[in-house]
Image (cartoon, rainbow, N blue to C red; front, side):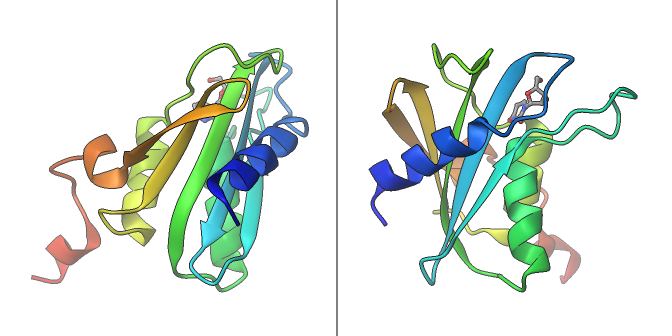
Length: 136
Ligand code: THU
């Protein structure tokens, strides 16, 4: 699975976004170390609070299927599904990534069309509260 293929899967997943309140559609594609891909989209709710981001949907699908090791995630978003700028993962999603991924976990953030930039989790969430801290 190339980075480009992962990005295309995120773009495809964005089409399933349920976002009648923001009209901001987000898609994600999470690659496991074994080469499997779990996709996600944002799913909103009339009560707002129960809404969930595309990244967490992909993670929770994967975790619930027994996956534990992840190498990268592609994220894409845009108003009305039009990709015109980057959609960096929100703080809550970064913390969820922190739970299951190491510092070198890669986040591919689509900018426009199929162009993307790559950042590491250690740069998205530096000096983080992580599971190892509780085991000390
Ligand atoms: N959203 C995501 O799915 N991922 C992010 O990292 C940022 C925000 C969603 C949540 C909400 O449905 C919409 O984008 C607007 O905030």
